Image 1 (cartoon, rainbow, N blue to C red):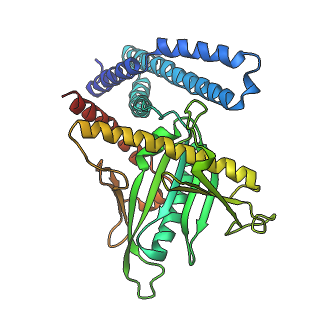
Image 2 (image 1 turned 120 degrees about the vertical axis):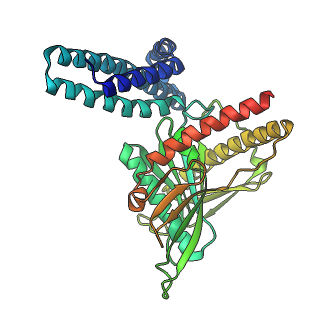
Length: 376
């Protein structure tokens, strides 16, 4: 007779897989993949590199999801067959292998489920992340640099390509701000839940009396604009300033006026870029980030207007989302989801998937709630 725990785990796995499969709709995905394959094979595709990159990225992510769905179905069928075979042969090792297999399936299904929740308008985009030091003086600048390393290590753990676009260094230590790009499909969907204020409590390494210090840093995550976004920025709406790059340089980076600062006059948004070698490259990168921020601003205004019409005017931009405490105890806790861990050093080293997954689930529930309130 089959083990009760195995039977329950298998039933739960089948139920979760059915829910995921309904949400993903494999037949629809296969049709999308076939259409994208035709587009990818079209002559002259790379005449428009941006469009070609968009097509190939979508094709890759679609094929990856299909492979994960098909593989998961095969694994569930195989583990059920393995358990039946073990019971029939009364082979303890085979039964143990089946039990281990179904538990692994349930863990992987949790990861797959997260992928199905990345269904926002821009979730499939690459991401541009900006980290700014807040209140806390030199400790805040140091905290901002720690967050920068944390996110870059997270990307490295997953094999995602990153590119630092701009870094403004602090006078004593750390950074005033930094902007980097993650060139990976769905990077925005995953990291957008990290946007907000991050709080650090620790014994300050910059205080000769060894006192506890609280410092803050802001994280902004925006989707990278695509050619289809149609963000029109007249030249009359921007002011472009050039200056010498600061911080670690070399190869002439700090000796020429290659850095670019673009100010969007109607909104006051400012974007600076200095990590490319030429002024032209920095200007192009700055314009792309400016367009991304204007796109987010436009969507944020639309969202606020909908909330006003629904009678709900709650500002959430810049709210504190997470606390990191290293003294008098060790704890990282997300204030929205309740997700927490005492493994602070691991978090600082980029082990933040649990927080991101919890944030994605929380955001999905918030979207459901907002849609329900809007429909009332």
